[in-house]
Image 1 (cartoon, helix red, strand yellow):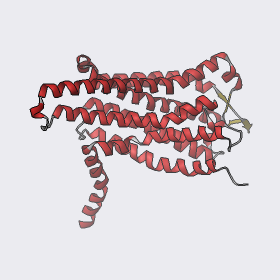
Image 2 (image 1 turned 30 degrees about the vertical axis):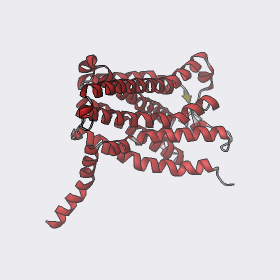
Image 3 (image 1 turned 90 degrees about the vertical axis):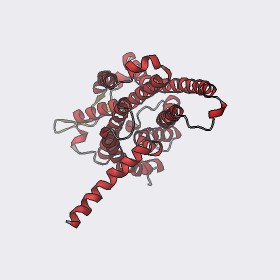
Length: 324
């Protein structure tokens, strides 16, 4: 009997995603850490944090969980203790990827709309403190996941596999925790990004009209460095946050309508529309963890230049060695 189409597609999709996503995020971290992209140090800190979180998603959520654990079910990764730890890291990595995107959006909102607060907030020290604080809170907030799963079977006195604890997820505390996790991971970040982007657009439109009025009609054809800088900032902001919202939207809607929040432990009909919608949502959600590199390359000229240098450097070294 042929396997369902969605299962065949995911067998191809996840290895391809990891093959592109891991090197892309590594390159992004390397390029941004060098500080030659013409971006402020504060923005670079947030972008490096986002790339690091996305790299963790690619490694643990995609490579370890959806590829290695799925294709090698009898490896040490299937020990219950290891399996529970992997689930815990998967949750924290996704949450950090989401909330670092929110922090980046907040930083751009403050820089454009709150000039009086900009000097205190848009600093490397403040960015580092916020990223560290959010990371610690996420790791503590996700601890219940370590107790939400139990072994599937016992082989030679060793616990194997992971399955949800029915008593945990049906208890009032478990139901509340599941909804809180869903709200904190998707709905609140989605609403914050949408709200802040709308306020940022409003501020830019008002400032643009005022600036054009001050400059007068005689300078309409002259370049305005300040407006050009704002235009580049807004393109970067909307590209990153817009990509996140679009790619996460399917997962949000499908989880709300179908009630499926974890397809990894699904044991029903793999041809059911609910499962296909949920699995498609997760695939698009993971895709958001490797799109930022493409966005930076498309919107940032200096990032493209640095990317070319990094990609050319191994070949340059090889040619030098060959010549010698």
